[in-house]
Length: 229
Length: 231
Picture 1 (tube, each protein chain N blue to C red):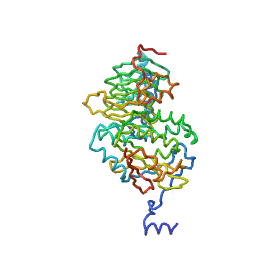
Picture 2 (tube, helix red, strand yellow):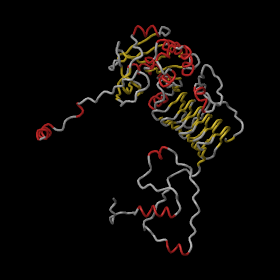
Picture 3 (cartoon, chains in turn green, purple):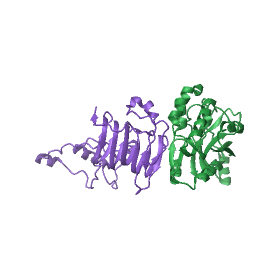
Picture 4 (cartoon, rainbow over the protein chains, first blue to last red):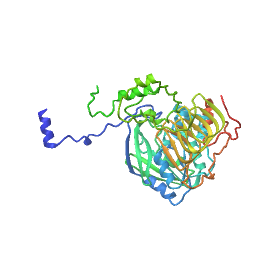
């Protein structure tokens, strides 16, 4: 006790900031949305920078955000003069496909796409896909990309994020918010078992109907991918 | 627990006593409103009971309990607020010249051009809505036009297109549709919005049919519902 007091007097109070906070772990089956304590940080994003550099000089574009309704995304995109469409894709995904095996069911896939991506061809000038594609099994993923290719205008862009760690049994579960045109707030909400990890080659095959793909690796071992229609 | 000192400005026990004497049924909160009460708009004000008849004999019994002026303990609430209670269902058009709280079910159209509409937590509205301001705590299926502000609270659900000057969103709210920010002064005009590929007309469904209707995001309910009625 006396030693501790002496140490405190000589060295000052222990610095709590040196002790890293415990990392929240969500070890469910990769299903559903974890409700753990959140870890939030804002970082630069090359992908976001590229995405907005293509649309910054125009106004009145239709932008689709698949991450649901968030104040920061709405504020930012509407402040640029664009019209924002939102779909809470993950919430619908887990509601429509309670089990991962359901994502093989072509009837359910068709229903899901008709409920969540039911837009005319060439509607959007940009889509913020975030990481939702990673939550999908191959048949649903292929159908979703096919539908995205239809509803996006030629020469417009998608921003998608994928984990870069191949063979990971557990990956962090993130949600993303736009902080400004060059940075995003990454909100780590736990961990999940990945449905599938997609490498660059697989992504190129998946987006074969698109004109080009550009990859940016982030410090969270994420790949930000800009896809041009 | 409380030691009354000469510095105590008001004897709160006596204040409460005064309100009971006045025939008020609501108790007075000394330490401010609860959070839940603040989240919801205040309930419609009940008509106060008739004041007690003061006779000569009763006049003598009343003794002043405090010399401090007593503030009106009524919370700030809108003077004119119409309410559709949670056990009420309305089909048809609602046009209101006062604020409206919908905590029940409404199917059709709602128009409060210069006033605020609140959809309570039990509210289920399948309607095209026009209002100056909207606060949503319940569920709305239909397009919303707001000249001032829309406030979508946590656990609220909105499927439809929004035109508004300002938008406030709480995390956890579910929204499916488009957001068009119309600057104040700019007339809300029908924009050339991209429509869903298969514009199947939405039947004005009852809440039990919600999953089917939920798939038709962005579509207003069937227009032209004639007549109004409460069941």
